[in-house]
Image (tube, rainbow, N blue to C red):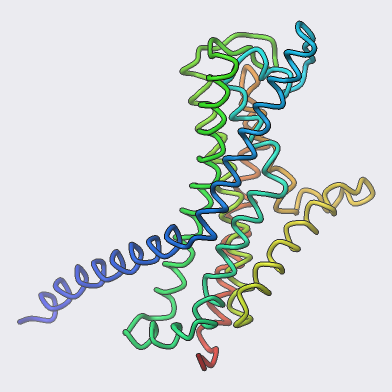
Length: 287
C-alpha cells in the first residue's frame, strides 16, 4: 500500500472516530439529569412569562404599549422574541456555564479525562469536540426558548401578521424567519461564552468552580456594559450587542449591530479556544 493510499484510509477513520466521539459527548450532555432539568427551567420560564402577560391583558384589556412585551398580547409569535429578551442576561448564560463547567473539569473530577486521552484521543480533538458540543448546547437552549415562546404564545394569544417596531406589517412566515435568525444570533453569543467557560474548565478539576466562574464572568460583563462611564469599553464587551437581535423586528432590518456582534462573538470564541488549547496541551493530567 502506498503512502497516499494509507493516508486516504486513515483520514476517513479519523473522521469516523471524531463523529463517534462527538455523538458520545452529545449523549452525555443531553443525558445528564441536571441538564434536562435546566432545559425544562428555560422552557418553564417562557410559559410563566406567557401566562403572566395573558393575565395582565385580561385585567387591563385594550391597554397596549409600544414595547416588545406589550406586542405579545397582540400576536403570540412575539413571545419567542420576548423569551429570548428575558433569558439572555441570566438564565441562558447560566445554562451554558453549567455545560462549560462539565466540559473538561467535569471529566477530571470523575477521573475519566486521563482515560479519554489514553483512548487515544488527541487533546486538540477532545477540545474541538467539547467546543462543538457547547455550541450545540447553546443552540439547543436558545431554540427551546424561541420554540416554546411561539407555541405558548400562539396558544394564548393566537398568531397572525406581525407589526414590526417600525410600524409596518410582515407575514407570519417572515416573522418566524426573523425569529430563527434571532435564535441563531443569540446562540452564537452563547457559544462564545461557552469558549470562555471551556478555557476556565481547563484551569481546574472542580466543575462547580468552573461553572461559577463562567457565570460570574457573564455577570461582570453585563455589569460593565451597564455602566455609562465605561461607554468606551462597551464595544469590546462580549454581551454589548447580544440584545441587538431586536433589530430584526425593524423594517427594514438594521444589520449593522448584528454583524458587528457576530464578529465580536467570533473573536472571543477564537481567542479563548486558543487559550484553552495552549494551556491544555501542556497540562499534567493526573485524573
